[in-house]
Amino acid sequence: MKPSVLRSIICSLALLFTCASASHAADAPKKILLVTVTKGFRHSSIPTATKVIMELGEKSKAFTVDLAATDADLLAKTTPEKLKTYDGFIFANTTLDLPLADKQAFLDAIKGGKGFAGMHSASDTFHGKDGKVDPYIEMLGGEFKTHGAQVGVECLVQDNKHPAVKHFGEAYCIEKEEIYLLINYDRTKVRDLLTLDKHPNKKSEAGHFPIAWCKDYGTGKVFYTSLGHREDVWENKAYQEHILNGIKWSLGLIPGESAPLKK
Ligand SMILES: [Zn+2]
Image (cartoon, rainbow, N blue to C red; front, side):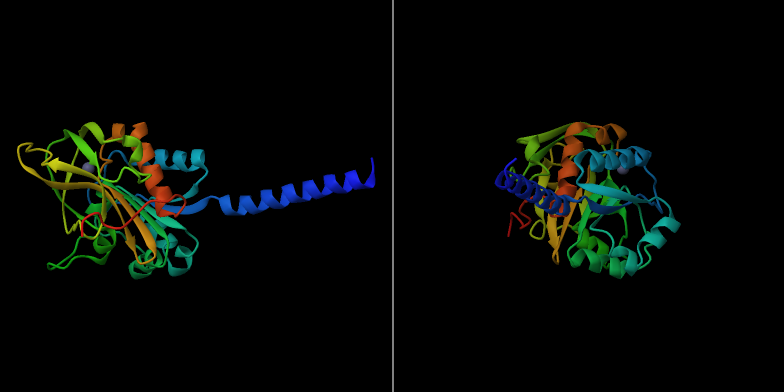
């Protein structure tokens, strides 16, 4: 082999390895803390939710999941020092006052650029007291108030470019689910992704009923979907794409607008 040919092969290989290692660093999976702790109602779908989120992380290679399933886990994993080791947080069907080691540090971490994704009763978590809205609810953008009987609904897609909902097309029709009615939600402060145009249980009552949205929180990104009560919802492929892309969006891995649609 001529020296020039050998040199060219070595150069190509060097370039290949440099590029491969550079892209590897950029594509390294993000680190997520998945919280499933409950201090109130405990959904029977939590084991399914945990399995689905872990599988989505593994299959997409977008994120690895560290689980906080108990009070002790959560306390240990949410100290200011530990919070720094995560790129984002998922609250899957959490309820009421969770024993975070440092709640303010947790909110500040999101405000400082980390991602947050919440499903279903993530909005039935940290309710305000004495008429005050809890800072967690301000971060999330809405708070669970009540729900009626499980029903079928047509969730209308509000942003057909957003990665968390664009695969639905015009609407996501869900056969049976527990649909939340929310308070402390302001459509001028979040970007609606899925909404109902009628009351889920009183179909003759027209209105604006939020189902899923995204928003900024400082430099952090927040995604919330109120869907996720039932096991079969978590097992639905369209729902899985909804939350996978919501999570990826919150981590800054894929683009999507977060400005409110209505000023
Ligand atoms: Zn529920």
